[in-house]
Length: 219
Ligand code: SF4
Image (cartoon, rainbow, N blue to C red; front, top):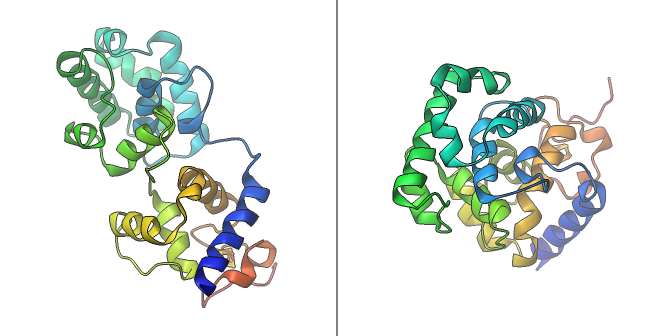
């Protein structure tokens, strides 16, 4: 009961602090389609949001459907998404995913978590992002590095992998918070509870956090 109350308090504080913050690119509302969400998410892997945004904007100016993407020569595609890093691999993945969607799903991103996962290049995080922010469904939670690290730090879960965290968070967190969980924890992780040197001295949820190595001095 105590833990439930603490979860509820933390979520309310994070909504207040970050609810109106600019959303990460994968959740951008501008001209959103499941396909755009999927491609932005593939571009976002292992890079910062500002790079994802630049690469997504460059690419979508030229092509934002699987039909258009498969027609772009590989080298040009690499150039368009260069700012996202790992651009050769990402370009190959984007082409492959576009091809599969075109050939097996009639050009439409499948609204089905398991089918998404079967496409090479799409992992659990990406599939969950597409189901949540591409299709607007509230029973999926995407776990990225922030969403895995922070619940472990603050003592909500004790897990070793993002997949375990996903199951545990779904078990303990009231469903009304599932949709916002990824966005709030990503923003919180980027701005306050950073991977190295978290800003505990200005953390709005410090009193609910059980992290033993809090950084409480602003040096
Ligand atoms: S007190 Fe520090 S470790 Fe705990 S949630 Fe806040 S920033 Fe993260």
